[in-house]
Amino acid sequence: MIELAKLSAHFGDATALRDADLVIRQGDRLGIVGESGSGKTMLALCLMGMAPDSARLTGRLSIDGRDMASASERDWQQLRSRKVAMVFQEPMSALNPLRRVGDTVMEPMLLHEGLSRSAARARTLSLFEEVGIPDPEHRLRQFPHEMSGGQRQRVLIALALACNPALLIADEPTTALDANVALRITDLLQRLARERNMALVFISHDLAAVARATQDIVVMYGGDMVERGPTAKVLSAPQHPYTKGLLGARPDPAMAGRDANGKRRRLPTIPGSVPPLHGLPKGCRFSGRCPVELPQCALRRPAFTQTEASRGAACHLLSEGRHD
Amino acid sequence: MTDAPLLQVRDLTRRYKLPRQSLLRRAPVLTALEGGAFTLNAGETLGVVGESGSGKSTLARLIMAFERPDEGQVLFRGRDLHSLPAQDLRALRRGFQMVFQDPFGSLNPRRIIGWSIAEPLRASGEGTAIAQRVAEALEQVGLHPAEASKYPHEFSGGQRQRIAIARAIITRPALLVADEAVSALDVSVQAQILNLLMDLQDDLGLGLVFISHDLAVVASICDRVMVLQHGKKLESGPAADVLRSPEHPYTKTLLKAAGARP
Image 1 (cartoon, chains in turn blue, cyan):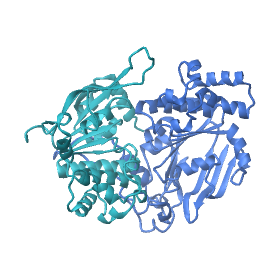
Image 2: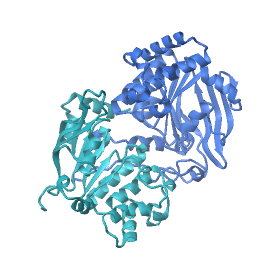
Image 3: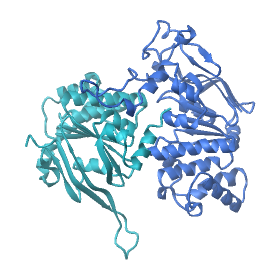
């Protein structure tokens, strides 16, 4: 359905996304994880045809066999209205505060599909039920501020589903939510994707959420896709040093407490911080912070090495066959 | 006074009047916090866990004496903050400082960070050796003193949170209140800031009230944990016990959310 080949996004000399390769088929549930500056949001914007004008795109991006890398805004609009939809992080700012949420959700149906108001209303009601909004008749007439964060996020999901997209892109959909609300929204997205046989791209820095919602995962760092494979395998046995560091840095209740000397245990960290875009190392983006760095890492880009069927990572250690 | 615990919170209750729904009826009242109570000693960390609306930020504002409780007391080294004359409270303020969630929103974008870091010193009337104290605070949070003349936008999110911490410790406080101090940060940066807080505590003997919605984060830094929901304490105890055998179903939910490990 969607195919990226060596897709890059350049801003002047800086590269926010470097040689992204990706295939998304109908019903795929794909997680994209990475921290700020990893390029994950740039990737999502490219998939939506919403990359900033200042970005120069190279490589191939095709949707349903059509090359979209140089498509016009008109073509993209058509595609976005029917094929691809997006759920954003902040449900409050993504909804018009002066409009009843029912009207907001009905709008694309009236606009893009020419439905009558009553037909649009009926579909909105059933969408509200599908995304788990109780008492939908009443909720339709409410304004965003009358709803909780979790309910607002459900409205946004209903809005994204309004025109039955084949692909739903969710960019940090749970970040602004309380933990157990986030859990329910994650499960909802996963269920909707399965029931509708809709592809889901779930972008998040929250590894637990990605683990729950997706089958496959891509780990990004500094604009590169550094590791990919089945979600469960990648997260339980990461192969790229960055993925290992990221997983290790998560606070683990089981590891908390004090050691034999009564000192509280420190969390494992990745040294340093993500360099700014124009200061990224030319070779492996992770060089300079990597605990197992080789001399060639800063100079030469590691090739993507397939370590098993359907998984692999871009690391010189792997290409030299020195992985564990 | 010196043998009084660092911080004692007794039966703290805070109610907010909500907007009137009708002219004929009394305005509804929201009880944001009811009967909050705990004791914290120097060097200890208390984690306060709860979701939005649990009353955890209200608790922070009451401890910091940003607002007054309807009932109860906040004793800092044995002195009730809410019954002190304003002047005494101002003098005492340098002893307890706060770190907020959003380091960008809490730093003045038009001022160099050295100015912002020195703010609490000026507020408490300490005018001497400010530049040296700023340099010292920056080093304590792992930044170079030369960074003092840069502006907030020149720093990453993690560095900005280090700056916010530098500002909080510049008065050499005995108590730090951190409200969602790492929630806006990336996982690897979050780990660095949590470690920094632990280092500072070990070095300076700070008492820390650490407020977060994330039980996993709280567990990694706190000795004791208190779980709040709808303004009430559901349970509290040593972090290890609460995590191993949570008594309340709500705590179990939080644990599940936090512990949904890959």
